[in-house]
Length: 488
Image (cartoon, rainbow, N blue to C red; front, side):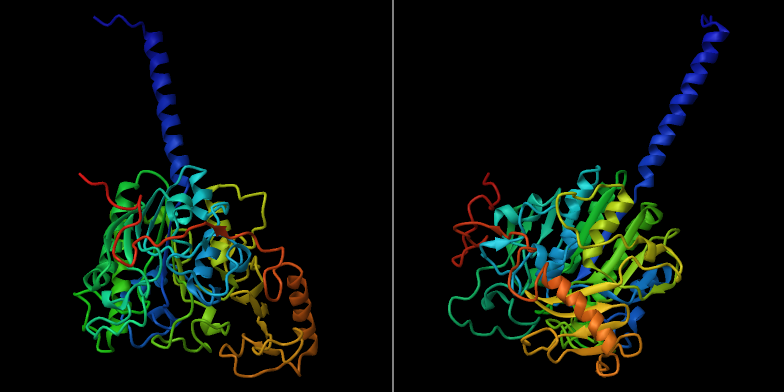
């Protein structure tokens, strides 16, 4: 016999309906926060992939990503990798947060300061799960590793895949003779999982890196599919030494470098396929880029210069953004953007507050990712630093290159290029446009009062620094205390 009176049943039904609606609203609010995946390739050249004109490398997955998203043709990194990664992590010009002349090396006593607030920490603050699969290269001391910089998980190398002893195969390409070591050489290259050294890296490990990283990335996506996540996937490929996987080595008619580019494309495809399988494509912004311009092994055309320079070929990198239903398919933007804009952009999309106690040089570039061509770019100026030295400034299409031979003043021997009609920086038009030169020199003078033209001025923040720095694996093969797997 039903003992509940009709009024009680009605109230109960209304209560259930309200609870269901609240639950649905909660899920909708949760789902409204997008996932983020940033895929960064090491030393990939501007025209190494199909969407940027490659006639050599077969990149069907990146071709598809470009068809489904937007290519960014004026996206800037740094001339080399540690500074570029510092910009991505902090939303700042590299010199502001990592004032070093070049890159970090194994056992250095400096790195990105633990006091810096990374994009992972910003997203963590609003409930994101954060993971890095791949190369870190912002310091290999315990205080500076990813787990201390906002990442819940990490699997990968602490720096470049060439930073180790020649006898371990890290100074020569797949199948080539091992070169003779001059002196003691660098300490062994470690592969880590969540701060634990899993193994010393040998040639077979190098050859499996892309597949290992891909499997880890797919696993991360599956494990975190029901919550907002940020996955940073910085491959060691296609940095020297070249080690394409066994299924890829020798498959390209254009040599071992193309083999590895094509394996990287396969990896991107697996990540995108995983999003589709988990019904996450329309909830996930995927950004594909490179950490700097390509080396002479790659194809930087039509840009001038290569990795290590502040010519366009050293810092302008191939970049694609994809988010079905949010970013227009098959579109392109030439608006100026860069690594330093990633943090403020993801923070804005996630509803996360930016640090209020420090300068953030980056801007939210979401307007140029999702809007039409008439949208005013949020950035029109970019400064080109090589290490500690300011070598050029761009505003709109105009780029002023300061003299490469260390001028006495910024005005000495400066050259002006119109990138809108001369992307290859072939013709100096400074004499014909003195007003433009003067305007850009004013920008240089203003930056001289902040990050300076050279050296380390007050605008730079302190490096992370430790005493008694040690490599993770010593030259005699012993793992640093606290970084070895626990013994049974």
